[in-house]
Amino acid sequence: MSMLIALIIAAEIGFWVTLGAGLAARYLLRWRRVSTVLLVCVPLIDVVLLVATIIDLRRGAEPEWGHGLAALYIGFSVAFGKDMIRWADERFARRFAGGPEPWKPPTHGWAKTAYEWKAWGKAMLGWAVAAVLLGLGYLLVDDPDKGRTLLGWALKPAVPLAIWFIFWPLWETMFPSKPKKAKAPLERMKDLLDR
Image (cartoon, rainbow, N blue to C red):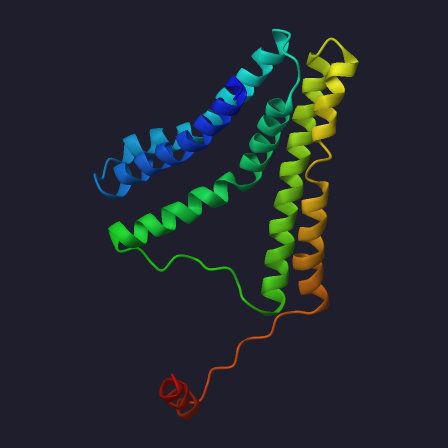
């Protein structure tokens, strides 16, 4: 395993550990300032990964899939990081501080359609950030033939993003989900007796 892959794994672990420590400081220990400092450090983990990738390429390392994966990781972390932090914060607040029920995505109608388009748009933003980082990596590599490996990584998310587009935002636009009908009390009783 390359040093860069180990660093990507460490960044993911570091993300969740730092986030957990920040939330524990906020809700369990009531250390608001410490919590703020820890939560501000969460995006700095991506900066460390970015700097390590740049240093590795500048030292003349052969561009490999670890460099491409690092760019994709950072891109999608930029796009979805805030949502992941909010998701964890809501659940931590609910569990340890009596906070409100965590937000749940809409399940039907145009609200669900808008949600699916927004989520897919964030994925496209992540892809765009990764593509820019890969392009910058290409410029850092002295040999254009070696740099093409990095540019090839810009196309890797195309198929998953196309599938996501077809089966979520496009599908919801064409065939919006309808609310599930609540069963009448007699139907619920029959379901219980049939078990």
